[in-house]
Image (cartoon, rainbow, N blue to C red; front, side, top):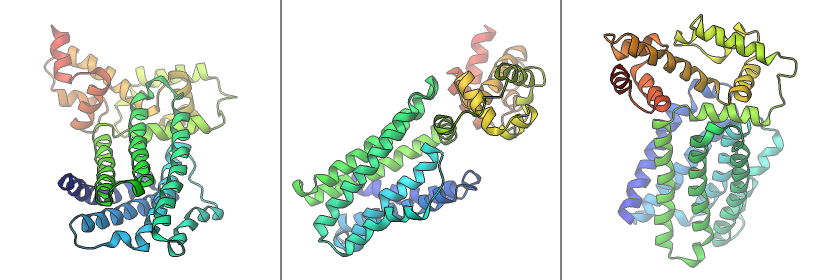
Length: 334
């Protein structure tokens, strides 16, 4: 077990660094300052915990019994809360009074180690209740949101297991606990890596769902039926989807709508996100071209349909059609 714990610990340390570089400072977080810095605090805190676990498990240093380690435990939960809040609640605000979320970290300097350790996991469990409610609120958003909910729920289950381990600490062997704890953190990062690899649009889909779940309707004065007809005309007649840099703002401007209005219109009327809608338009076009142009290369058809790269085309085609472009062509030509 210890070898697996060390392997997952090392993986989580380096993957956390990758996430900091590739995710927190990309364009998606340009206007989400709270989420960016809280995410940085979260990943740095988890790296610190895992480094501490690594030294403990290899008998190199007993950092886990320091008060600084307990302080880090208190910081993880609120950092996660403010990192996830813009994603699950569409709320990136940080009023000054929110600083009190981090006040318990100072308890590490005032109370006994064992009490601080247990209290950190009790407080963390309270944040898990918020996470459960936030995920549950999204479950009724749309019928094709199952994949996103499964991903979020799996991360939640891992977090619950970590909380259970922490609360059971007085009852189990310390060595066993830190093996399990470091493995749980490592598995969470491993699962996040899988999500990003196989479902890169997950974050966009969840954000769009959160916006429509908690926002007041922006369509009260809009002729939704006519706007849907206009949207269909842009896609079917003008083939707007062929622009590989097409985004929500561009389409909304052409329809004389705000981005929030267009996002809500597609979500409520068609039951999907804008990114999903756009991928479906492109895949529908590609399916026709694969059969009508049997000598054209698969890549050229993907690029003509609006995809910016071969990998994006193959991933979207498999997601929507359930097969690869080559297999689809072979089956339908027969």
